[in-house]
Image (cartoon, rainbow, N blue to C red):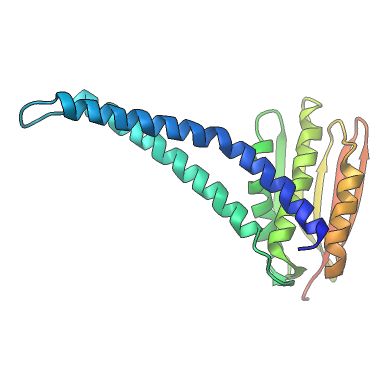
Length: 218
């Protein structure tokens, strides 16, 4: 990876790692409690039916909750692993890559932000899908922070076709971000080898706007 790609991948990976740290610790503690409960039941049980129905229900609920947490963590790690694949540039489906970027940035999206998504079907574009997903995750995260700082703000992510180009539009109407132009420069370093471009803008009280344009196979 180039230095720009490393920076894009590194920041998203760090964010997701931090997000996963607390749930992993909680999962460890919960599974430890389940094991302790089972050991106590086995040690104190007598007769052919050692476990009461209520105890079994409690254990079942704890195990189900732990399984759900494991499943969620595994999905997040799988998404990050897919995005970190360092494949050579080629033709790929833009909407799928943008959708993965949105899922990587999901921890920034939630209550307090109106989210508008329109991922239209466009001809295949040229580049590296995993790197684009990481880049989209960073841009969406910047817009989400901007939107969250101004109550009632919205964030939109759109994929559109424009002649021989396909565009990804990531826009919010929040407080704005001083990082927007730096992110634009970073994205430009990643996109230029693909023949792609980006425009980045931000204004205090007006939000951020990013427009990525990629060549299509059409």
